View (cartoon, rainbow, N blue to C red):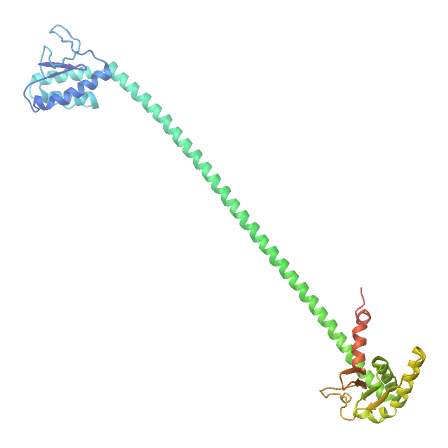
Length: 334
């Protein structure tokens, strides 16, 4: 029994392959070739025809090839290789006929080659498109990443610049504030030194006076006019007590005269010297401790009402009230 497959003659017989084992493989191969090359199926060839044909029974009139030869022939038709080992002259002749037929590419092989080339060209275009799209996506991703990183760097730089500006503003403000405080402190120290110098000059002036009686009398009269009491106790330094005793009568008379002149009423005041408590002594150079430049302290109503009319208190009052004028003299505006 012979069967013609795509121009190749295949026989059935006893060989290296059993027909029962080869038949399923041949059926699948023949079915594939029929679908690819569109050969007519079921046409039986006689001994006088050369047309290749297929039959459901795999039979054709003519010479025969054993299944051992059929498998290599099919492999040659599919893979382009010939691997036939003929055991007899009849098989060698069949192999030669197959090689002669296979030397020229058949139209079906040309169609297959054309289809392969077309598919390969399409695959190449597709692969190039994929590569191009991949490169474009890669470029877009790289540009996006670079843009994001640039924005991050820019934001970090802006934040750092803002922090530096804030730190600079804080440091500048602290420096200005420190300078202002140092300036205020220096001016205050200058005012304190001025007050100390005035105290020294006043102490020297008090020692130069021949008689401080007039000065003490005026201090007592000022205190009486502020109290307007009938009985007042006068306190002074212990060194001024003797001089102050001589001032009490004159101070009381001047107080009554002033009240009479300004109000028309007769009002007298009884003055007495405080011999139990005295003011602090005069300041001594190089000696620490409380001191008093002079003056008097008047109190009444058992000490509940008190008028401090000492030189130290009056100096503090003048320094406080005349501070703007003193600052203008010490620190003139530019």
